[in-house]
Each structure stands twice: as C-alpha cells, then as structure tokens.
Length: 581
Image 1 (cartoon, rainbow, N blue to C red):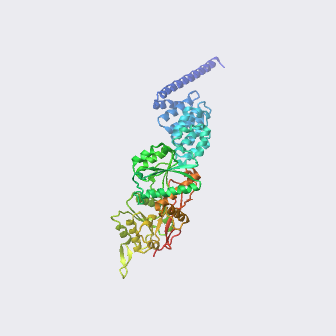
Image 2 (tube, helix red, strand yellow):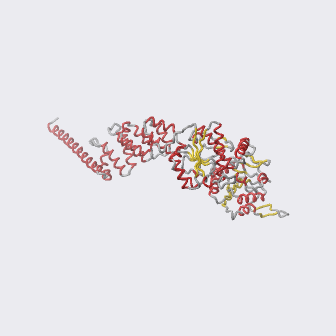
Image 3 (cartoon, helix red, strand yellow):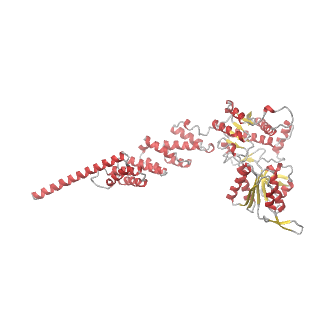
C-alpha cells in the first residue's frame, strides 16, 4: 500500500474515532440534561429529552437507562399505556439488564393501578429480593387493601403462600366480615404461621367460643317492680310477667336435664335512662346472653353494649330487624317481617296455580316491611301482582269494594260477576294484624265465592269474632311461626305443669317464654356462648312447642310454617285444595 493511501486510512480511522467520541459525548450530555429534568420533576420536558435517546445506537451507552426513565416520565405524566409499553420493551430487549428488578417494580405498580393484582404480584414474585424491600411491602399493603373479596385474597395466598403482606391482608379482610362469616381456623393458623400480633385485629375478630358449666342469661325487661303490688289481679305489665314466668319455668326444667342457667333480672322500667343505668353495671359484662330490651326505643344503647363487650343479645318476641341493626351479636328468635313476606310469596308461588295476586297492607311500619318484602320476592318468582294498596282503617271498605263490586246479577239479584272478574286472580296477600282490615278481605273474597286463596298470619286466630268455619271453607292460610296445636304432647305437658305451678292456664307469652328459654338453653349447651356458629351449620332445628328454626343464613329465624283449618282443627299445611266453593 502506498504511503498516501496509508495516511488517508489513518486519517479516516482517526475521524471515525473522533466522531464516535463526539457522538458518545453528545449522548452523555443529552442524557445528563434529561436526567436533570426528571430529577426536578419536570416530567414533560424529561419525556421529550429522553425520546431521542431510546432509539438504538451502538454508541449510546445510555439506551437502557434512557428507556427506563422515559417510561417513568410517561408514568408521572399519566401516560400509563406509554410507560407500560416501554417497560415491556425493556424486558424484551434487555432481559439481562442489571436494573431489571426496578423495571418489574414499576410494572407491578402499573398493574396495581389498573387493579390487575395478580399480574402485579407476578411481577414482584419474579425477583424475590424485591419482596424484602420496605417500599415494596408498603406498596403491596396499600393496593391489596382495596380488595374486598376474601376469596380473591385466598387465591392470591395460594399462589404466594409465604407472602407476609398477602397473609396479613387476608386476615384483616376476614376479620372485617360479619362475625358469622369469619373463618376463625384460617385466621388463627395465619396469625401463628406469620407471627402476627393478634391484638392488631382484636377489635374486629370473632370472639373465641366458650363452653361453660353454667351460663348467665340476663333479662332486660320492663318489670316495673316499683309499681307491682302483691295481689292476684292482672298487672299493667302482665304480658311481660307472663313471658318471664315461661322463661323461669323452662330454666327450671333445663336444670333437671343438666343445663344450668343463671337467670338474672334487670328492670328497664320502660325508660332509656333506666336502661343506660343498668348498662353501667360492671356485672352485666360477665353475662353470656342479653335478652331484650322489649321496646325498640331502648335497643340502641343495648346494641352498643353488646358490640363493645361481644355479648349476644336476643329478642324472644320481636320481628323487627332494627332490633339488632348492624350488630353481629344480635338475634331474633322469631322470623323477621321481611322473612314472613318472602316465605308467603314462596308459598303462594309453590301452591297456587293461578299466579295473579293482589296485595293489601296496613299503615304500620311492620305491615309496610312485610308487604314490600313479599312484592320483591313475588316478582323474582314470577307472580303477577295485579293490584297493591296501602289501606287505612278509615278507608278499609276500599278492600271490599276492590274485591266484590258487582257488575252482573242472577235472577234473584245475587251477584254473579264483579269488576274484578271471577277466578281472574289466584290469591290475596294481606299484610296486617288489624281485624278491621283483614276481615274486609275475608268478606270480599267470601262474597265472590270463587277459588281465591287468602294468605295472612296466625294473629288472625286471636280474633274472638272470627268464624273459623269460614276460615276452613275458604282455605284461609296463615304464616304461623309460634303456633302450637293444643293436642301436641309437648304442649299438653307444658300446660299441665304450668297450671300446677301457677294455678292458671298459660298465656301466649308464657308459651313463647318457655319455648325461647328451652331452645336457647339447649343451644348454649350444645354450641357454647356463641351458639349461632353451630346453628349456621343446620338448615332446620326442631323446636319444643314451636315447629322449628333455621338460622343457617341470617340473624333471625328463616323457617316459617303455614297453617289452615281442616276438620274443625288447625293443622300445619301441606298441599292445598284449590276451591272454596
């Protein structure tokens, strides 16, 4: 090669080296400038400054870092898709880059922002060292607390069985569920495995069940002890005393069976002030079951006491779910008004072929709740509600007119057709205990003489003026959770023992009191202080005087039997004859 050619080649090589060096210096300068924008949180300017640095060039030593900070700048500018695409590109093009754990961290953050929790956890799981960083634990705790579904967290723990944050989030989520839904076994195992401080969850955790040789049951009743006189005359609060006599008699019977109940009496005096004063007694905190109060306006402070001290409270007579409200320790022995409405709709749907139904209800809150519950369930079951009306006592005749206004007569002036045509409806649901209202329904349907079935409730049996022969002929059906046949052997024994002890026939309240204490006493014996846990596992528990109970999915009795007259006697109903002509 000639000297001139060698010189030219050397010059060219020098030029290339110089050019490459200048280019590298230019990349360094651009990168430094872009980083300054980023560090000063001028993310828009940083995004533009990093843009030319993310294009591949063998002389660009800042390619990976530029791509990474370009993605972060886009993220801070809320260009999430741009950031995500660039991070994915880094993972694909530079899989061995030393800062890949940091890339996965930000990918996880983006997935968390998008509520793609499992993908986020997968990103973090690819580099186990990430999970030991405080910032990562804090990020996971921040985002995972958004998950309300316990089952989702269970699945996540199955995939990340050693993840402390996932485990603690699951324990916290379970503990925030209603007490009846908490999985105590899983909570205890996770607390033990990860060494969590139980006190951190104590305020929301389900209490540990306890079995005792003797259970303390405290009655918060308006005994009005100061006004009682030692006479045989009927007292102003006789119904309360009758309820107590039944409870006391059952407690005595339970003792003979080895079930020991320490029955304690507290007089609420029909006063919120007196009730609040009782709740200040330290001794009340050692009770295992609060019974009452019996008046709704006294329920709120007892609810608070029940929640704060994790003591069950129960009403033997109420059907109002406001008694327990949001209290997980509250129970109703009786079916709620909502349940009565639902079961009545289910009974009609299952037993009456003609799906056209009319609904009447009174003005009390209980009537409204029952009717609304009926209507909601009826719609779900495909019943056709042709008429719904709220009726006051003053316009009760509206019911009769709605049912039995004639439009056609026979030769003897007897109505043979009505505005509401014969057999055009299959049933009438009447949500009221008021005789003035439900007798209008009975009278109207009786005048029609067709196959309409009336569904009401067992309180209709207490109407002294009721003609039970008419009830039987019309196949009137009643929800009857507290009905007991007089011929029932258990009732016969109870009645005989009550008369022997007190010299009088037991009232309805005495019967309810006895049934209540009998049922609760056996539940305490079999299932412990928080007996609702055991009851959840059974769809039906037979009663002693009453038909039975179902607490498998709620805080009130879900089982509602139905009755009608047959052969002059009331019986629990099976299949229903469809004509009352």
